[in-house]
Length: 131
Image (cartoon, rainbow, N blue to C red; front, side, top):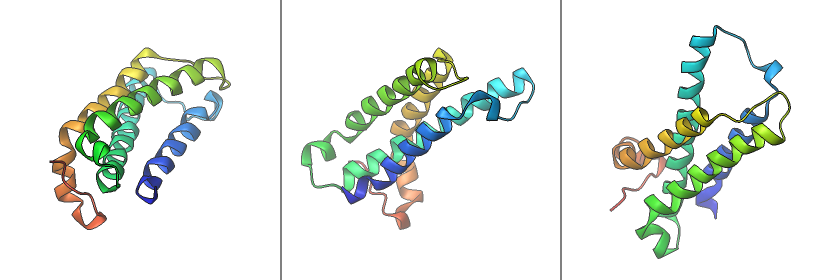
């Protein structure tokens, strides 16, 4: 479980950031905000999926080690969808956005495709390679 602490902290950070009321988000021009917002979504879900894969690869469960890509990708994408639903239903002054969900999913895809590259770069932080 200790290997999943960064994943859980990242998931909590995402929940907090996506739950901030719309009035508390800095306003910039629409086009600048649109592009920046999508890269933020992709980036935070990229990190979530990287941390989740790291946790699975360092854990004791052999099934999760062998299938870390799918075992992390699917829950991270589903979490991105849940966040968007919560923004539309529960969080004040927020709205669900299918393009945000696409950006969340894109970040997860990039994390899965580039995990070994980042694992080599982050070896000192105990990122094991995916076999």
